[in-house]
Image (tube, rainbow, N blue to C red):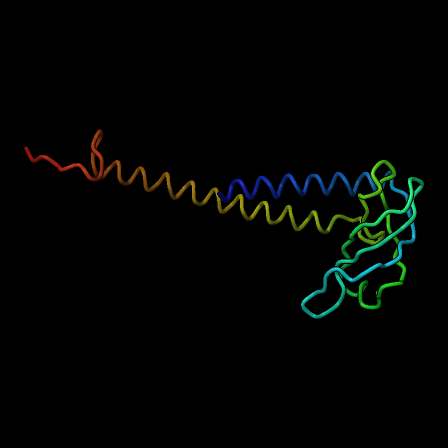
Amino acid sequence: MFGSVAGIMGWEAGQENQLLHDLREHGRRAEATVVAIAGRSEEGWPNYLAVRFVAPSGVVEAHIDVEGDSGRDLKPGGHVPVVYDPSDPSEVRHADFLGGSDAGGLRLGSVLFGLLAAGFLVGTVREVMRVKAETGAGETPDSPRTEA
């Protein structure tokens, strides 16, 4: 289970890294209007926004993450700089957050779950070897032992 979670998180981190790289290299900047505050931090600051902006293909509505103090003053009707993929304008990120910190968190989580998976695997192998040594070759732990 931990190995599967680690693999999925690693894959997602790779996808996010690739998207951020593509946006840095080929993305188009736009000024987006905040439509709504879609999520708040534990402190009550906006951290997830519904935004609207105009791309060559038309009006795009999307959701973006904002971090830390950058979301404190944002309200519906306010403006925020975004970068979007011209071939798929629904792929949009806040212009200040193209460095990859979100992908870094996914990578770290992937490593953590990978280490947990490795630990469980090692523990399982050791337990199987211990039981095998105690019961003797060819016997199962629940089978009655015969004394000679």
